[in-house]
Length: 112
Length: 307
Image (tube, each protein chain N blue to C red):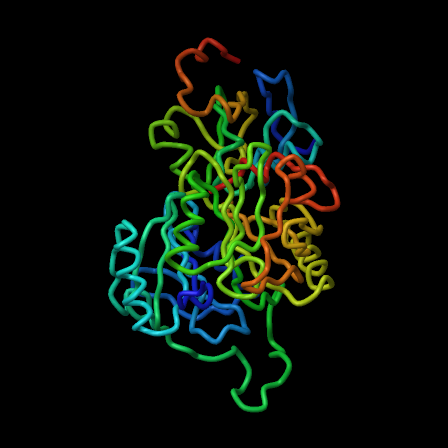
């Protein structure tokens, strides 16, 4: 682990990995052979790596509005292939089958 | 029976960042950058294509395909097909000449799978890039990246593949070159051709309409496909699967993603189809082998990762 690595906890998968600041969460995860998140296009287009960031700072690149609405973006939802950690992060995976109609409020209790 | 549709002409692809996308399609695939229009759309082409452009990139907040266009023989055929589409019950929109730089009037309609298609009769022909029209050399020497020769086809996912096949067959004169049939006898995939190629467009049944699986570009040899794989690694480009071979069409292939998550294919080889050929059939139970002939196992991404 280097100084710029950040610890990424995936609460609902009981997994964690380290991610450097210049890699997206998804690429960081793949490089450590961790399978906590599903891997799709890695370009913000397909939506399969959708997550909710429960705590921590990150920067993001543009993500498909078909998968992350403006409101969802404000609520901390993101695609793991488009965000770069700026601190340790606590996240949860949103499996593809639950993406449509997922209730944001029910998971708020799952604090880090 | 052929109705005067001669070949794929263009595809307009939505991207999240036009600068990143241009670097991908120009520097990695090796398409030729043609120009940028007043809307900021970027036009490109494969070096062997005689038309001015075949790929149009448009920046948008949702990646995917805007439309795919086919060239028809002449303006009489275009007028006839416009009438035929209307008579078939399609809603037809006319796009005036010049809306795409260098392209004549276009007739746009929606397929039952939810995808937009266009027909046009005229597009500026600038000739093969870097070669003279008389005594052309074998290839131009200053190509980049994978040196993709041409835009070849798209694979599209949506509902009502059967109705879309009937529209393409009955109105546009496409032939069914290859198909996937499920145990109940339903067509789960249709590979359609307006030429001798194994596909000029392909459809796979999926509940969500209008989804884009990939745009495909032709390379000459298996060595070129392996070299494309090297370039994908050298540039840390998002890989999907390959190099491998498809059972369907028997093309040799590699799948990867553009920086907005749209899937691309480069491939070589593959079967040919004459109008008197029976369609080639694969069973849905053997879909793994049909899609990835060597692994014989379907990866989840092939069915679910779409833009």
